[in-house]
Image 1 (cartoon, protein in one colour):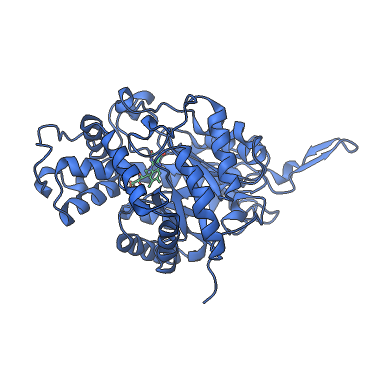
Image 2: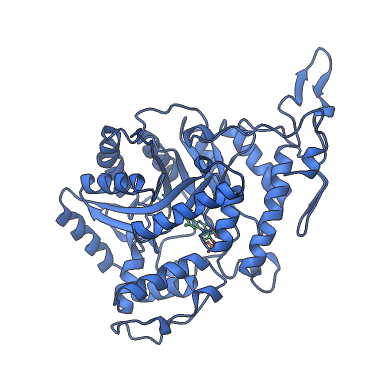
Length: 452
Ligand SMILES: Cc1cc2nc3c(=O)[nH]c(=O)nc-3n(C[C@H](O)[C@H](O)[C@H](O)COP(=O)(O)O)c2cc1C
């Protein structure tokens, strides 16, 4: 069997993914608005040869801010600052198709692609968080289906904008007084169902041409979207079997959409608590759970179900599915509601136990154990066809990232599963993704405007 090389992304989230991580002694005491904190995480992840570091984003203040550290820096500006502090690692920044306009988004990412020398990717989100609409003058949250409908139109316009300059459009020839070959730059005249953009973009094509497209839709609608556009996919699973089913479904959907399945890299979340023995790791895990507050957990659970009220439920009664709304009716992140109700259906959990299970990484796979156990589990998921790599979500930052880089990465390298040195200079290269040539050529001048 040929050796499969895996991919690792660091998901940065506050002072760690565990709800109580920010209170742990191994969490940073730097402010969440201090760029040095993010620079040090990026450098550590680069020491560990990670493919990328990822910044999520929500366009409304988290209601739980009173008791959980949050309110971090805006992703795109953060990435711009961190480019100078690193040389190899890629950056994935989140931006919303519901609340941005294609022109400013395409321009921001084209700029970032230049600033980072081809190390940027866009996490395409439709914004599931309630309340964001009110920050943009929209009275009610757009429905899940409608958000995705706009996302298709939006991404199409962005791709056209990125292709509106041919690779050789900039002549920059002072002798001949020709800066740009204007016949190599074209308007896009995109008029879709939701967005209308004339173009062309006002910045030259970036080093990657197209920044890497990342997405995390896992509902049937989300999977269709990912199959059409995503080159890397984040996904949340509590066990290998559902991750493997998702993996198979997404790769098949990509093939059906006319794409090669190896051009869609699937990265489930893993939140590892590492100890020198399994018992020590479990002790850390329990310590973290003891620091949680059920009121904080209840607010987060309610958010996941679009504001549904769970506060009347007894914390120590075993839950049934009747305690939850039908996940298919949820207008937030549908697939996460399915993950949570699936857990309730499988295991006889009380509300308190469910909140503890979700405190770690909000419905992602959590694992407490030795470095060997973590490395073996990663290998097992990859070899079983459940993952191409992982979205690493340390419960406490930077402490648990340090553990992962120092103790798990060397084991993955020893297994021949993970790079020892960077072999490419772009994010596209790290993920083994093909270059995407501009669809702009002399003969196909109209192509940019018509076909995507
Ligand atoms: C690892 C991961 C990171 C995500 N980051 C964001 C984010 O930064 N902002 C956001 O609005 N949604 C984010 N989401 C939510 C997804 O964009 C999507 O709404 C969610 O996975 C549910 O998919 P579905 O809407 O197809 O059910 C993230 C999801 C995952 C799994």
